[in-house]
Length: 166
Image 1 (cartoon, helix red, strand yellow):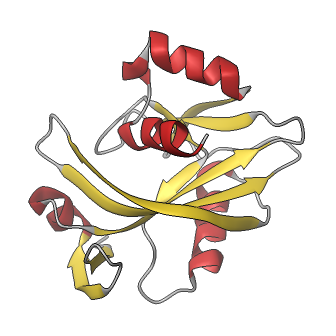
Image 2 (cartoon, rainbow, N blue to C red):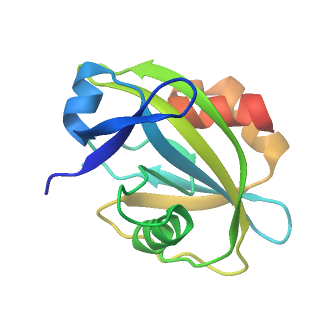
């Protein structure tokens, strides 16, 4: 299935569409989103990416991340992705946005203008095994300590999110 991403400049002005893998091969800046989900106790919901993911397999990251859909409202699409990846539904709100760039060993580059959303979920996720190998909830201080001790266990963008916003 071919998926397009929305190319943008540093001011988040749309420049057009490009197939997702081509954008990652060429390192073009495009929109993405990351969702931080907390439980009512303030713990962060983490997912471990599935082994078959095209980059960052088996690394721990935020509850849901993907790319905006060119023809679907952002909130509607993000909620669909959260349900698809983690089997959860909750309200979300935009917290911030930031640009990051990361090169991967497989030759791909993530150059993304990442919209960071937050939500609170009271329940247990039902992850999609094609997307998620495992999940857990953790307190922020414990997460930050773990990231210091074993930083290679976490995705690049998730480390950026925690260091910049939490």
